[in-house]
Length: 493
Image 1 (spheres, one colour):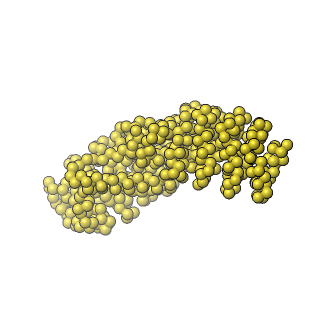
Image 2 (cartoon, helix red, strand yellow):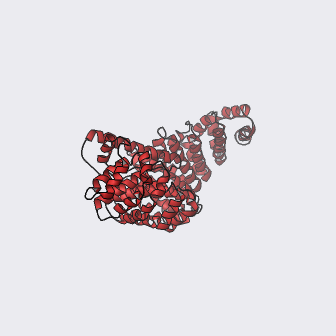
Image 3 (cartoon, rainbow, N blue to C red):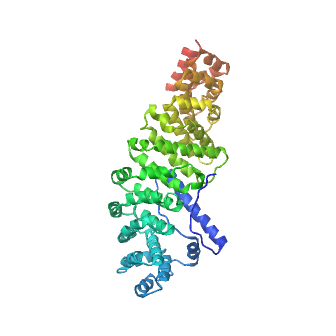
């Protein structure tokens, strides 16, 4: 159903070698996204076609003489495209990049070819700029500045490959230099990206590239003060949300990039009312429900977790600005709690940190909504959640908080939880070495017991008395006081 689509331009030759290169490149891109999931990551990307990947293997870095290529381009006639193609490959060498930009009028030459009438030369010229933008040398960003007005202009047309190269080139240079970022903002990169996504909604490769470029901008210094207000004032938020469509044919890669952009917006602003009004919480929740359904059907394709992570963080951040009375209408579907439970189990062993984040969102939702707590019981999810209480890495603590939220909402919920086996689960968690789990278990047990005298009797029949006595004698401080209070005021009486 769901897959991480990667759109690239096909070319023939050396199928086995090319397939190996494609897999290696995709693994690298996936690793970058994985790192972004764990921490905010500004990274550069090099867009390679399959035929160029083969050439890359055959060319030794530094083999080409960029000086002679530059002079050849100055004087050649019909051979410019061939020289440019060779130059772009030579510019993969960092030392060759420095040599090239130090040549007098070298960037002026590239810009001239970029804006010329020959479409093939324009494509190779932007390829050269793209190679320079991927350089480890931060000076390359400033060197590419003369080309940025034209790169932005070309976002409105040209071929998919050409537009992709323009976008990734812009995305590569904007984090390197404050002057470059300021110039791009002044030149209108925000409305240009908004227009690009709007006009290319069904072009996977371009939408993904535009999302990457916007994310790079959102990670720059002072983005909160200078970039995010411009983004929120534009049509970009609605454009980003439009990409979060639960459509398996649309592919995950563009949605991943746009979801991380939304995460940057929700993490950097305190007031999310504007995003809520545009349906951000509804859209993110809807996609999580869809992804949870895919997991239930057994689809755990690689890459799904890279979309789930920013969506979870968006929902968690947006909840803080959503009035409790508007939560039901914003979420739109109580099945979100079921989807989150499925995602917790799906990522429990492969991505425990993500499973914990999922449980965190589930905790926030149930803390705010009696309706969602009721849905958790209606869908019979509580017994499955209780199975997670023996797990460590903070997952069991978060799951117990979810169950505590349910117990806190209504006495009827406490009785239902007791019927589903929570008392025996608490008897086990009270024996844990983790003091946080013991303290939280005592809190949940207190809510359960005060809701009904029968629950206290049931807990005693299950051997709970000896468990509390052991806590009373083997612990000190707050834990001991809580156990003593339960024994003396609610159980032994």
